[in-house]
Amino acid sequence: AGASGPVRWRMLRGPEEPYGPGGPRLADSVPYGVFGLGTGLLVLYAALGEVLAGGPAEAVAAPSAVALTLSMGPAEWLLHRFRSGTLAGLRAARSPLRFRLRMLGVLARCLSAYLAVLLALGLAGTLCWPGAPPLGGARAGTLLLLGAVMWTGLLLQSFGAVRAAAAVCAGAAAAQSLALLLEFGQPRTVQLAVAGAAAASLAALVCLLLGRATAHR
Image (cartoon, rainbow, N blue to C red; front, side, top):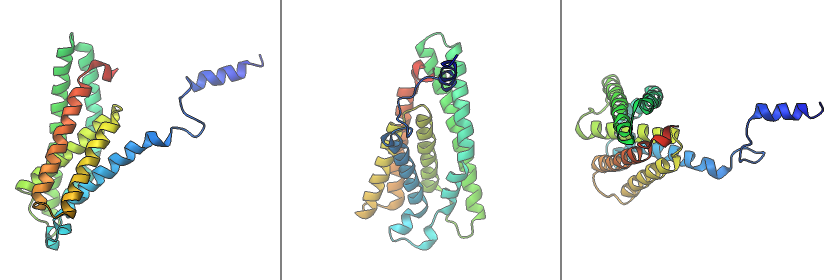
């Protein structure tokens, strides 16, 4: 009877976690901070890149930063829809190839929906923000590519692949910072190229890591 209390407590707590009394190790939380810092710098450069490179104050693209911030609500909902869709695909698929194709279909729908919302927010913000530069060409492309970077990075993070997402985002932020310091290239072109490379890298990682059924169990 005397041992029943500790036994019940252990049952309620569940299996022992591989952490010390202070919780998760500090090193385990570092990639989350690196991911946040990297994406934060990319958003900052999207808004202020041209000004930081010596351009006119009118070049501040604040609506892009606001659109990326406001889009995080729909982004979280679409992450949930992705997980629900892939779990349904996992139950319905009869082979690894069929599951991968279903996963890619769900990914395309969710990412397209997010980018459509982001573009709508960017256009609305540009119309409402006094003196905002027009959202055309390179600016719109950079906004959508940054949105793809943030959404696919959050997707990888939600499936435990935060180190890969953090490495790509931190590398992109470092490349853009270096280009700014060395005055290399035209800021808008550099932003577009860096965001495109990061988006392509994260998309490849999503297809590689989340195309396996074991990642969704």
